[in-house]
Length: 223
Ligand SMILES: [Zn+2]
Image 1 (cartoon, rainbow, N blue to C red):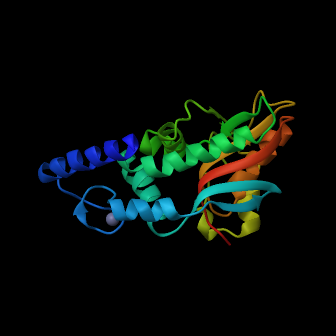
Image 2 (tube, helix red, strand yellow; image 1 turned 90 degrees about the vertical axis):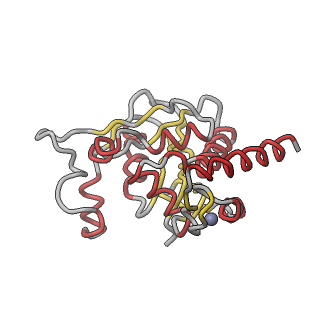
């Protein structure tokens, strides 16, 4: 009840602000606010997705399509951190569930952004989303530089132009896990498309003597 009243008050405050700072909903274009109430309830009604990546269960808060895809692209490409709350809250809930269902002492590790992405944005979308979901300062896997200073992952063509085999070959060895020997690990990333990057994260944890008990993502491309 108190929560409803607070939300109603926030809506009213934002409606007043909207008079001075008119914005359109990214979901439907309604000249209202960044994400209108109708679009928010569409998001809230969407169920979690479950699939396997490298033999590990992946829980994704959403399928990567439509409004979810738009929100993530606005966050990642345009720095719209104001849109991260609804996705972040769902991600945080999934992470907490994953940790609660895992053995005590399970470590949460995030998949780091590509060096290029991190440089361009100046922020890590996974960290922003987790913070919105109440998960602070998750430890990160490390990106590994090849001897010439270029990450193998960033070299050459983009992921889409490559065959699956080329993608896997270019990704193996790009991540490293530390301080996970003998530990259970939950991995978290923003979007899982082909699953190649998440599979590399699983490989890196296993190579360091850890065990991945679950993967979590905001959104997944369902095959
Ligand atoms: Zn809308």
